[in-house]
Amino acid sequence: MKIVLQNLTKRYPNRNKKIKEDVIAVNNFNFEIPDGKLIGLLGPSGCGKSTTLNMICGLEKPTEGKIFFGEDDVTELPPENRGVGMVFQSYALYPHLTVLQNIMFPLENRKGKDRMTKEEMRQKAEEAARLVQIDQLLERKPSELSGGQQQRVAIARALVKVPRVLLLDEPLSNLDARLRLQTREEIRRIQKETGITTVFVTHDQEEAMSISDMIVVMEAGVVQQIAKPQQIYEDPINLFVARFLGTPPINVFKGEVKSGILYIGKDAVLKVVPDSKWKEGAQDAAPGVALKEGTVAVGVRPEGFVPRPEGELHCGLTAVEVMGRDTSIVATNDAAIGGSIRTIVSTEEIAHAQGETVNFHLKPGRTYLFDEDDGSRVRCKFLPLQ
Ligand code: ADP
Ligand code: MG
Image 1: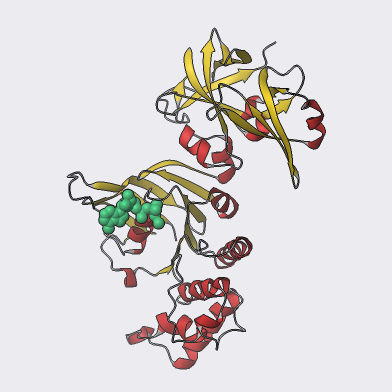
Image 2: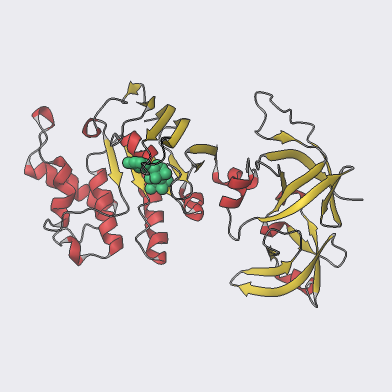
């Protein structure tokens, strides 16, 4: 079932009574969530993720805009008639009911032709329990389960009615690191097996990257970018998105474009020319602004640095750190925001990082320019200096 969000907007009166203006929790959200896909809704705390999800499930009424499930306008429909399954960060299980009774709960009190016998309910609940692999635990109480098992019960409960849409709001936040990893793989598997259109809310970029078919990045109620995970990483449309995705984070420098050369501090690092395939304002053009001379923000992904004695970017060497498969060179540069950078290089390359300084070539495909004032992506092409 595809979900269409049309000009979806939610305004709340400000909680701080002294401030007259409303809080715009979600601002004109437009997106068609394709049928059967898992969408990661990603952004920092307070950016409007839960509000968006709550409008999709019907717990919150939009101030403006519409929501469609397939061709049905569900904007005015109460949550219980929308056919959604919801899973929250807190598992919200009934402590006095067994696992089986908790999963069966949404099937009780069905009326008319939807009414089910106890035996039918039991069968459905067992099916859902098998799907999340807790069918051994049906007679236990929630207090006798680990956090991960409790969250599986909550997922089974959301699935038991075979929802048209599955909505998960930070479902893994209360789990420890290992369980988080395991449970997110489970959620992915279950989503693929059932093919239920799913929206997964998280503030954790790695979680969103690993689980989603598409990611929606939000900031302050406004959708920043919608794309496949790898595309968001490789082609961020602004500095906010570039910084929000990737660990270690993208390195940002103050730079300057002068006579077609990009400078970081005094170092000329790359030749830069306008992107001939890109036209500002053209309908199918990627968002951004055209290259012009002057100061810019330069983003370089950690893997965009190649240490070489003759490298163009001159840095002070702080440390070489080996962490599992990754080797990091940590270095200082006066033009870097925060004064230092963290790179990821291959083990063979650390031979070029000895002594007090280290020089880097910058990989054109991992280097990005952004407008210094508003962070818009500057569309350009890089070429080697000679
Ligand atoms: P997220 O889930 O991304 O952390 P929310 O959707 O919960 O963000 O909140 C988005 C914004 O709306 C925040 O600024 C929050 O303070 C505000 N907000 C959420 N619910 C209410 C409410 N009931 N009344 C007033 N402001 C609210
Ligand atoms: Mg939230």
